[in-house]
Image 1: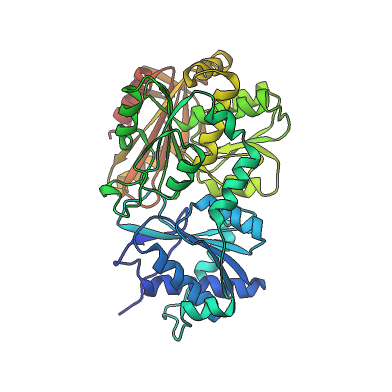
Image 2: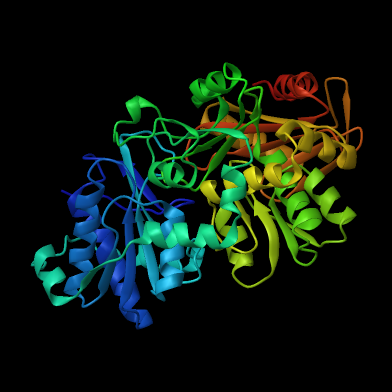
Length: 469
C-alpha cells in the first residue's frame, strides 16, 4: 500500500484521527523533523499537545523518534496552549517547538505544527525543508518513552507556569481582577481552560473542562459557535466582557456587554490605540494581512507609524515580527499579536490586554469602540464563504485579476488592488469587497466593508449577484 503523502498547509499538517492522522504517520513526520534538526545541528525541542484525543500518545510518539536521533524533548506534564509552547522555546533556548494540535478544526482532526526558536511559526522555507525529508517508511526500533526519561532525553518542564509568570510580569492582573468588570470566558474545551481559571478566578467560565469531543463543535471562536457565551452575557447585567479562545488558545473571540461579537478588525484597532495612547508605545510598525480593514492603515497614519500589508496567513506577520519592531500585527480570522510578547498569536494575551484597557480607562468596550469611531469613522466587516465548483471558483478569481468588474449593484469600482486575492474599492475608500479563493476547498471567500451591517450585506449581495454566485 502506498504511504500517504503528507503536506503541511498554512498552519501545519492536519488530518482526521485514525484515517491519515495515525501513530505511524506521526512517526514519519517526526522523522522528517529530526532529520532536519540534525542538519541544523540542533538537539532540543519543546513538544506540547492540546486537549484533542490521544495528544499525549502522539507527543510520546514524537519524543521517541527524536530520542532515537539523540534529540532531547522538553514536555509539559499535561495539555498546554500553542503560545505556551512558543514561549517555552524562547525561555528554555530550545531549537524548535512542535505542537500536537489541529487548532480550531473539528474534533475528529489532529495536527502537527512547527514553531521557530524565535517564538512564532516556523518560516515557510523551514517547513518545506522538513516536509521534503518526511520518509515513506515508518521509523523502526524506537526506544521506549520510559527509557528516554531515564536517559535524560525527555525533560518535564512546567510550561504553563512559565507562561503565567510571563503574564504576571507584563499585565496588571490585580487591577483586572479588582476592576469590577464582570468577565465571562469560553475555553471551548480547549487548552486555555486552566490558565483562564487561574488568571481570572472571579470570571464565569464556560466549557472549561477536559472533553476531547468538544461536544461535536469545532472549537473556532466565531460568533455562530459562541451563542451560549453571548446569551450568558446578555442575561447577566454584571457581565461586561466575553473572551473566547480556540482549541489551542492562539485565537480569540470577543463580546461586549450586550453580548455582541466584536470582530478582529475592531480588536486590532483597539490594541493599536491602547498601546499608542495609554502604554505610550510610539515606535514600531503596524502589520496587517490583505483582508484586514483599511481603517488600521488610517489609524497608523494618524499616529505617524509605518504599516505593511502582507499576504493572508499569520506566518507572514510572524516572519516580520521576528526581525522588526512591530506594535501590532494581525489577520481577519482572529490571529493577533502585539509588541512585548513573542511573535505569536495568543488569544489569552489579547483578551487580557482588552480587559486591562477597560480597567485602566474605566470605560466599557462599547465606549472604547466609540472613541475609535471618533478617530476613523464607524465601519462593519463581514464575509461569505460561498461553495462553488472549483473550475468556476478559479474562473472568477482569474476574472477578478485580469478583467475586473467596473460596477456592482449601485456601486462604482474606483480602485482595485491585488495582493492575495482582489480588493475592489467602491465609491471611495471606506467601502470595499474582496474575492479570494480557498486553497483547499471548493470555496470562494467574499469579504466586504461598509458603514454598518446593513450596508455590508448589500455589498456582499451585490458582489455575489454580479459574479453569479
